[in-house]
Each structure stands twice: as C-alpha cells, then as structure tokens.
Image (cartoon, rainbow, N blue to C red; front, side):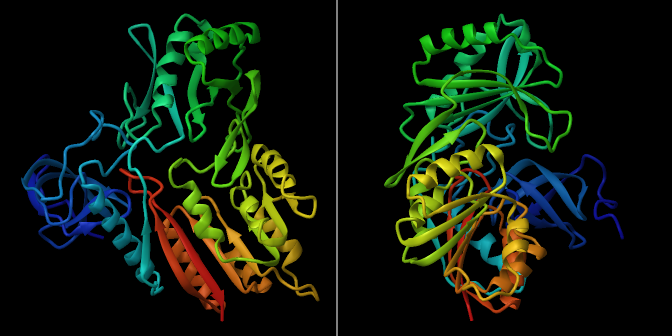
Length: 446
C-alpha cells in the first residue's frame, strides 16, 4: 500500500478543505492524491492549513496550523485547556452544530454497515457542567500535588484548574483533595482520583487509586479525609484502593472513610450507587434516557441485560410483572440487588455476564420469551455470540442503548439478519463538547 504522506515534505503545511465530521472528533479532508486525512479541531466546510504527521489505521492524520476560511459556526472555546486536553473535541463548534454533526455521523455509520435507519430523533439538555463523574490523574509540580487530565493524543498528564463540562462541585473537590494530601507521603504513590456526585451536588464520593504494592496508613488516610470534609462538607465517603497487578482484576480497598455509596435520584426513583459502580454521567439527561428506553413498555417479563446499578430495571419494575436484571461487575451487582429489591421480591438480580446468562437461557424450550429485552452494553457492544443467542430467544421487542455507533451498527446489522427491524432511533447527547454520543434504538421482531 502506498503511503499517502510520501509525496508531502516533512513539516510542510498544506491547504485542506474539510468535507465533513467523522466519528472520533476530527474533520475529514483529502490529500492531493485523494487519500483521506483526519484533521482534529476543524469544522465542515473550513479551509485550513495543516501538517500531515503520519498514518493511523490506514488513514493520514494532520494538525491544523492555521484557519484560512473559518466556518460561521466556529465559536470560542469555553475552557482554556481546550485543544491541549484530550477530553473535549467540539468546544470550537456552536452547540446546534455539534448535534447536527453527531446525528449525521450516526446515520452515516449505520448506512456504512448496511442499515437504513429511520428518522433519528435528537435529545439534549444543558451542554455545560453536566458531568457527575470525572477521573483525574495525580502529578507533582515543584513539590505541589496536583490533579489533571491527559493531553490530546498523549499519555502525558497536565494540571488543570477548570473543567466546564464537570459539575462545579467536582472541580472544587479536586482542588481541595490536593490541598489535603500535599504533605501526605503516601500520596506520592497515588495514581488517579475519581469524583462522583449526585445530581443536586449535595453529596460526593471520592475513590483514590494507588500504585500496586502500596502500603497506606489507614489512620493517616482517615485523618486527611476528616480535614477534607471540614472544607468540603458535601463529602460523604472516600476510599483508597491498590491497583491490581492483573489489569482485569478489580482494585483492592486499602482503607475507607464514611459512606460506601450515594443515593442518586433519577426521575421518580432513588438509586444506591457504590464507589466504583457504573452510573450514567449526565445528571441533566439521565431521566430522559430512562424514559426513552422504557416508555410504552409493559408485560409479564422483561430482561435488563448489562443492568449496572439498575437504572432501567427500577423503571421497568413499574410496568412489568417481573424483571430479570443481569450484571457482572461486583460493585454494581450489590447496588442492583439493593435497588431492585425496593421494587418487590418478585424481581430478580443475577450476577452473571450477559453471554453466560444467555447460554443458560436461550436454548429452545417451552418457556415463553420475555416481551422485552433492554441492552446497555459497554463500548465493545454485544458481539456476534450475544446477537446469535438473542435471536434464539426471540423477544418481540428489544431496546439497545449504546455509547458507540460503530459497534452499534455492527450489532444492529446482525440482528436485522435474524429477523428484527429498527422501529425507532434516538441520539441522546449525554456527552456535549465531545464526539461521544448515546443512542437508544428500538427493534421489533418481524
């Protein structure tokens, strides 16, 4: 294969016209020989100068050196770290344009997989201060303990003192934690800190991850957390954890202080969410996401697969006689069991991977299938094995909640081959200012 950059002098800036936005946060342009090149921090229609810096997965990448013709939809970024930080990719675009780009990317991704989607409904809320969870990395600068994010396209951590997409409490907590731990010798072994708050910013959990084989003093940790709560009264609980040598193993708790979980309200329901358990990060759109995934659904039996802490299970328990919820992550399983028990003893929380659960239950039998299956897998999606087993189950309707349009389109194509069709598709902008998106797809069995 020819190298698309081989005829371009090193470090030479060339003009590029941005054709469209592509998944991942970049704009697509064409090199003089017609090869595709991804250019971050650009908008469709813009003429830019950029330096091509090499290939990734067969596509050239380039960095902007100048904007020759800016889009009328280009806007000033709200965060001073934008462009350096690896978190946000769309702060230079007016919010309405962000939504249009994401909808178009979703549609094109589906078409590329051979799926013709229906009209895509777009749902959004306040695009700033929406995150209820952030994860930051520790670093020391001139002896001062700080927290920061990774730079764009790098593992290098840089200190930050603002994050406009995060709930203000989380940013305030990060600064306070650094002050509380600056003189703690054990903090030199700290890797990351995760901050999680409820929607009202009235309660906060902090989890600190340490290097493997760290010896942490529980007494010193508790004393530091008590000092921290004096300046951060919202602090409800904290834990310090040792990173396991095996990357697939969960971290081991070394010490804890305060409550182990928060009570989070979404719509009409309250959920217990433990430190480290997954929960949707957009505090302004979580209720609408639940409504989209569960509305107008009722019957005798529903399966909630990849159930997490039970965000959808609790709502489904109000309209289905029986909910079977399946989750494999240990912290989430405990929360799921607690949260689903509040809805009645007829409902069942199962600790299992979805694949193992389906292998046990999808075999042909005289049992009637559930009327509905709700699926909320991680970014990797369902995969061929799960899709094949779902086809064997033959539920009348499935709702697929996805955070990755690429794996979603792959799975939807497989389910369509099994006899399902897409009845509705919603793009829910849970991650404004970034290229990430959430999708709720309703499928019915032909």
